[in-house]
Amino acid sequence: MSDDSVSINIKSLIKSLEPDELGKFEPLSGLMLINLPHDEYMAAFTRFAANASTVEDIALIGTINHETYHAMQAAASGYGFDRQRRLAAVFAKMEAPDPSADPEVKSLLDTLHAAAGDDPALKARAARAEAMLLAHRTVEMLDAQAAPGDNSLFGAIHPAFFRCQTDLVEHEAACNPDGLSIQGLLEGSAVAFAHCLMQPGGAREAIEAELATLPPLYQELYTLTAARAGERALELIMPAVALALCYSEPHNAYAEMLALLAAAPPGGALAYGRKIIANLPAHPAAGAILGTSIDVRRTHDSYRIYDQFIQYLEAGRDGVDAYAALADPASMNQVRSMPFAIVTADDFHASAQSMTYPELVMRMLTMSWVLRVAGRRRQELDLQNLQLQWAHDVLHHLVDNLPSS
Image (tube, rainbow, N blue to C red):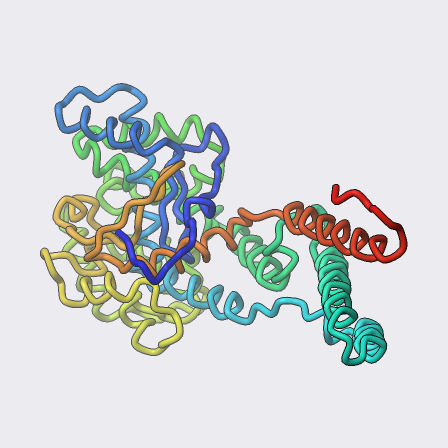
């Protein structure tokens, strides 16, 4: 995609993932990062189409499917969409520091400009001194408000956003009496989704094998489901997650949704869940009933990242609605419009039908800020260069034949 009205190197905004991290979905921007160069990414899918996938290709596709379910959580579920909507509201309150409002700086600048008067040469020198002073004070202000150890530029500009994000993550990490946390529900369901999609006939063995290699957080959901549902665990887990994500405290809704679905005859849980979602029961510990992303979006107009996909789900195009996107992994074989763009290690992929180039730029900027791509070191180097230029300008009027270097 291209647009002559946009002149920004958005490749400079790409987040570098850790070497052992194959992929990552960033939900506020709706972008999926893949830790491979463009050519290697495309080659993996060429081999897949030719039934010649390597072990590494299978791992990549499994990661993409896992992260795709995180995208469905953000774009189709009430909890996921409301979570991002609330974060976006804090994100939008960003206020860059204004050094010119500092009384000491303002006094210095007033004195500087008064001394320069109407002399063009003095006014030019005053302007350069002003730029140096403002840049220096900006760095001081950013250093003062940044969290300890956070050397990113956006972390210093908007520390309130990251405090909010930290508080949310801590809340989501807390386990209920059943040993289930919100994070455990989100991650455990992504593991189950990926394997149910890739190998529906042998998903149980694949899920258990992968969970054995992962931290306890990822095991919470499946452990609880297997203990409560036994042999029906795999039939019930995804519909129960879809229903639980209709509540503001989904981990506290999960066990009850699992029990309700267990009343369905074997093989009928998916259809029975559709009846439940049409009339969700109140459950005090589970918090407010949010419904799906469609319901939340109807009452909030400030966060529009997923509008196109939400409209797709609301219309039920390709036979997929919000419930199916979350409860039925097989529905992904029908979906023709995903709620994200792919960003590889050195390129980006988004169809013109899914978003315009300016929208992609906006999403890339958001992603780079949320993931703290830019550090403050570059700004400090720029300030040092500005200070050197200013010092040379001052010395030039004091020392004859001063070298330009």
